[in-house]
Length: 116
Image (cartoon, rainbow, N blue to C red; front, side, top):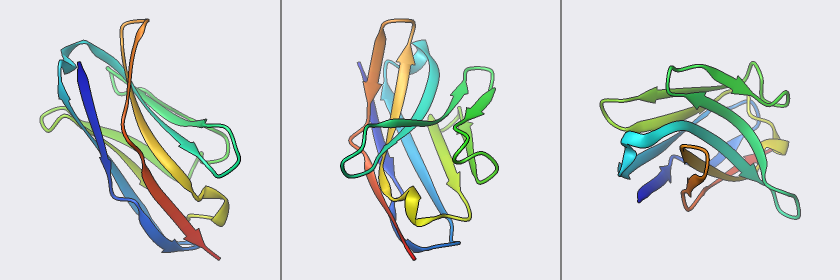
C-alpha cells in the first residue's frame, strides 16, 4: 500500500503562486509515475502533469509554462509549483501514484482557490 498526503493549497489572488506537495509513504519502491490532477466544481477530474521515475515531465496545455512538477527522492515528495495562477485554476488538486500498470493510489486532495 502507498499513502499520499497533499498539502500547500489555499487562497491566492490571480497572478500569484502556490506550491503543492505530495508526501508518499508505504510501499513506494515500486512507484514509477507520479501525476497531479485537478477537479473543479461540476467538472471532470483532469490531468495537470506527470513526472516519471527518471524525472521526465509532461503538462496539460492549460498549465504549460506556468506549472512545474519536481520530485525529491530523499524526502519521498513530489511538488507542483504553480505560478501566474488564474481563476480557472481553482480546483481540488490530487496527487496520484502509479505502481506498475495496474496499481494506482490517490491522495485526499487539497483545495486551491484563485480570486480575480
